[in-house]
Length: 439
Image 1 (cartoon, one colour):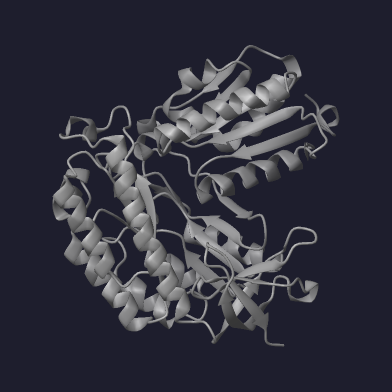
Image 2 (spheres, rainbow, N blue to C red; image 1 turned 135 degrees about the vertical axis):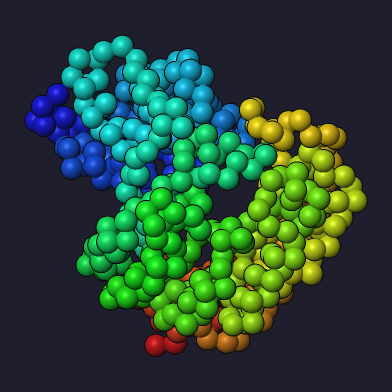
């Protein structure tokens, strides 16, 4: 279809899953916008619907199916495109969903605009473009603005780890990275747009550069020199790849925030072995202790899976005790989900759903206690807050350097600025803090 033919065609975007997916959807939207498509308004019946799916659990697959079916019912004449991890892992299943016209896997995600364009030109039969994970080689650059103020910079994609419970290597392909020069240019472009904060994203960020003879420390050292960006955050990094040098560099940096997200998955060495993780609890505890030693105010979020096959009641209690003893700020708790084709399916015994739910509640209660205690330390103090763009008529929110979420009455002149704010009181169950900008 000609450029003139697609002008004013509207596109609705729907994203499930991780921050990386949201960043990639934003990049897809920008590319489509450059080709003449416009973002559908709430009142539109969109001409095209793009769904970026997730497949981290069975529930994620189910949500993807439900969303695709609902969108077809609501927009029977729209061209529906499915991409993302569910589309990569189970393309035939996704293609069989009524109304789905195009299925695009990981290798071709950033070429999606070409498939849409050609399909609109002749309304050809359903198209499925999915490359086997072993052959995925392309790194699709993505630097996208979030819903408010922060930007998400994709530096790495794919994973070579093959943990026993995980399908992400099959969904995302082998580990691959962007070049330092290109990533620095993208960060400089964010600064030119007035962006203040960049979150570094990827599937296994600590593996950055292994395919190109470099490493994450070199990348973040170069990003730290980008003028105009006041904050960087590392979204998630494996504990065995979070080197002492990286911790020390963040501690010494003016731009990298005292904030870490580290997947533990279980506080039992026996379960970590069953999971095929590449560290033990002693190494994890050492990493956390090092962070707190050089950055006492650091926020540390930790991922934990409960109910993994082979996690006996005694091993769960070990995990719970280990997490309780760690000086961390919050737990992100996930019940184990059976994934077809994973090695974990051969492990016995399986944990009943009811017991997974019980263990989740215990971990979530511990997380709430940890976050409440961490938050209480800073009430009455002043910390720098980056204020984000609020929805119309709503209060403004923002995060401190050490990732405490704050709320204040909207002051438009403060949006996208970093100001000291006095932290007063916890405002809700999510531990948001009422704050008063000190200006």
